[in-house]
Figure 1 (cartoon, rainbow, N blue to C red):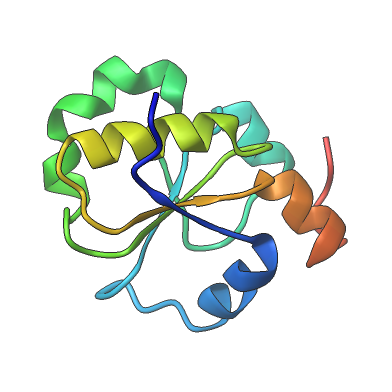
Figure 2 (figure 1 turned 120 degrees about the horizontal axis):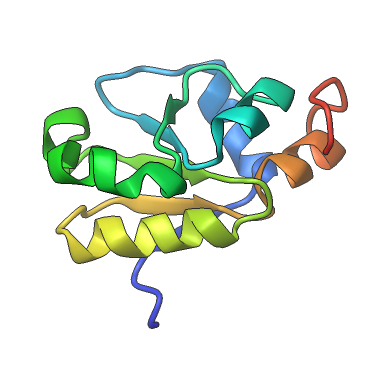
Length: 115
């Protein structure tokens, strides 16, 4: 798998979250519902990879291909898979959040629970 998407660090993510504008930024979380209940960041749309068959067919109705899209998971592996899939579908500005919510909790905001 060749990576054709960019990456963003949790330190770089923080200012994005401070000024979310839905018109120019899409936030996607691919973790499972039980993970979201344990720890979540505001503003993220949830697309669990285990439910791929349910939402993949209408992804173009829910996300804009040309809007900057940041993808989150627990450590950055599943989000990288999602970034690859979105890029393969013609999304032009996709970024994987390196280290996922776990890194965000350790580096940026310790009030976000680790699991």
